[in-house]
Length: 69
Image (cartoon, rainbow, N blue to C red):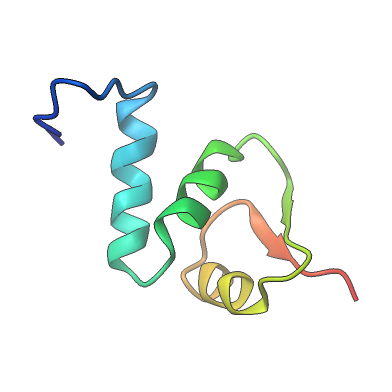
């Protein structure tokens, strides 16, 4: 994915591209980028965002999203 923004440096183009695809599937882009950046983890804990966790888990994205009770 080419950003064509001369004043923007992308740290990990593969992660940004994957996050963008998740964004196109209905996730918030920032949430998607955090999730993609956490792929080494076994779980991704979100304390407030049940909608994000449900959507990410419905899409079978990794790591699994957890909302503590």
